[in-house]
Image (cartoon, rainbow, N blue to C red; front, top):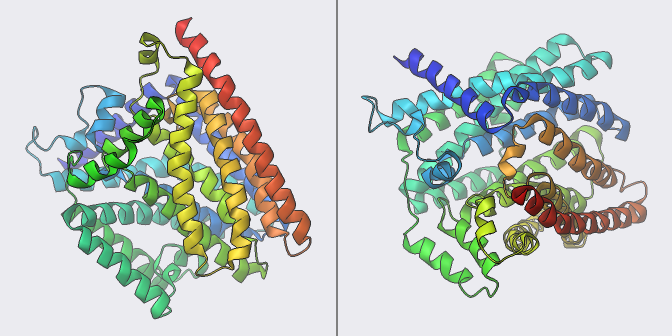
Length: 464
């Protein structure tokens, strides 16, 4: 029965994605992933970054991707109904099928690992591998990297599911688990990377394999055992969050803020997703310094990646918007996008500012201050590109091949120069920092212009 359920879930995933994201064109998505990864693996060594560091970055980014996929508990049935209509996915069908929810969830987690391995992870490793082998890396090393990447995705998905599961049971236990982890890492000096699948690539051995994979199995077991789907939109915490936004004068901005506050996970999912990206950035900065001796400019690095990560916030502030519904009201689409932008900035910039403040525990505040200049420009640029390309339906970017390629190219055009600036700061500190701040400001102006163009563009399409 489990085998049949697994096959049904794989078919369900494929039909869902191909229906939502471009039909037959969706099948070309792995080719785009491979191409973008190959381009990144080709460009980064030009900055002096070793291929081994590029590989470790790929593992870290895949773990972040797994964390995002694993936040099924933050998506909730409200968002699923808004996107899919009145239908139920197999993972939520425990009440109608003679199967336990734990069995459904465990099968769903296994399906996600296998599905994304074939559709995203393997193409990414192939794209890296083509460039790496041409640069002298052995095929065996690329094969080990593939194992580490798949395991990293499973680790990220399991960690996210476990954290959400504990939080749904007890917020006190959730805070306690985070505090205990901080004590182990900071107080006892334990290297957390040694207990992640990256250890499989850094030191291939049976011991490293056991040490790197065992935590994933434990986290998956905790997540499956404790997770429960809840709808807490009417909880006191949600009502308290809503009161923060009811005083916002602009109704369009207030609507977007309240839609996030009333959804499953509330504004906590913004903080969570930005926190994951913050942790990945901190990990990458440490790895780059350890591998190359280069000390990247932390403000530029954090500002760039936190600004890019604000795309998830844009998805959430528009998740309940029905683009055609605004045609019934006496409001211009330019005003709709302006209100959405204000809500997006209120959520994403406040979260980014909080994490930049946390980073002062490890990095000088003067260096991190540059991040406060970089984040707004990058965030506005991301909003403008997403709004212009997808309107109020940004989730189409996820797997629509053409949109994903355009969006990826647009982000790379900004992200690559900024990250290069963060790496060459030791050679030309003034030029690197000034150039990064100027580039981010210019990108923000482009994003502002694209936002202004997005309203007339999509209003014309919807009325046409």
